[in-house]
Length: 584
Image (tube, helix red, strand yellow):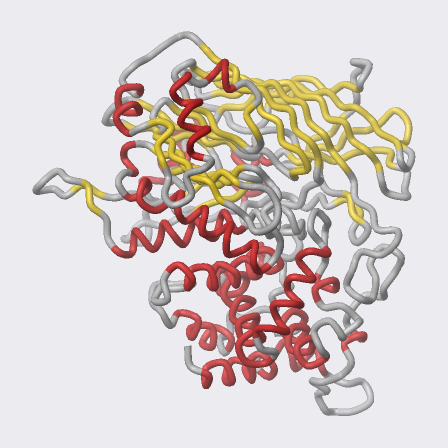
């Protein structure tokens, strides 16, 4: 990109937008002080968060450990589960109640989201779409959302609870004192949504041609809401766009599925001898040392044969994951599975993997796992070594992608040529797949490890991740169409910053009009300006890596990214970032 673009963008960041003018108005005069000291805007440092931008001596965060046993009923498209949550109160405050997130409730017919959304209109303008009719029919036929069957304490005594849309408050019989733990036991079930009808971040996909399914499950269990030093309980309702902030913990999860399914998940498989064949275990061991290209664990031919079979038998897959903030999984008899090893300069080795149906080949076998490995190599150089043993990409119906610890759900497939019947794909489909895999696997770093509050500050994970995605894509291909459909797409941010739709990136995600420009492209463009023009790569890369490593497995806020102590970034770059975050 041209240097002139960076200069123009830096000026635009500093001066554009009426929001900045309003924020800079002085009470003792009529002038705008665009270069006033930042301490006017940043919160006062305390014993939890130091002025340097580092966690201070009294920093704390809660911990939630889960043991879950779940069963997938493929015929009924239904999950039944029980779980035990061990919750440790590391805060200095006694807690008389605990909040959990019930994200599946967004699919209830009477949810706040459903009662406030507008139906997409057909081209005629006065008719609803076929997709809306399909949703209405599904609501009439099948109830959705969590069915909470019991809530008890560690002694199996019933606990009082209140469900408020996508949140549930559990009242404790006695306040949970600081540095003490409590145990919650829950039983629940829900009907899995058809992702093609409802969209969202999980569900199932039905393949009509061969009467088969893939299941990809996220937000599938009641999850502890975050309790933080900056906002107390983070219990804003889940409305669909603003994502999540969660507590770190350890997971022990057993999932029972049809015996002919292949299942992948967050964490490490504990019982491979029970659920994998001898040949699959041998291939999996070989893949760890396969560093130049992926090898099949389940071949396309094996997957094609497997999807034609049916069984009433079941298998239970047992997984454990340490120090993660969430758990997701995918299961299907259709899955092709390939993998390759990733050697890191620091830290342990990683197994990059992909799971996909035959409908996704040959695109996925060529690019998905390679893109996973490339992402780990690139992001680790700019932040910290990947701390988990697995990084997984799963092909789903999702138009884009969605991220979880160690696993991501990603779209894009080839299409059949109507004349020849052969599958083919365009350059845009290839780049789309590579881009979405880089972006979603990259989210392991932000916010799955650097655990920012997505419900509050979307830009802190989407913006930072898009910036690293941009650099990683150019390392893949110097002509890659970063952050858009053409190689100059970052130039497009200037038009947004001059538009009336622009709002400060601190705006809540549910109130942003142009979400992609505001939360993704604008922060990425500003960080690119800082790295390439204002600071230079050496100074910027040091600062960015310092921030990343300081807040690994912790929860930063914007003021931790823009610390009072300007020495880490230098006052000028810090000023550019602060103007962008607080006012532009």
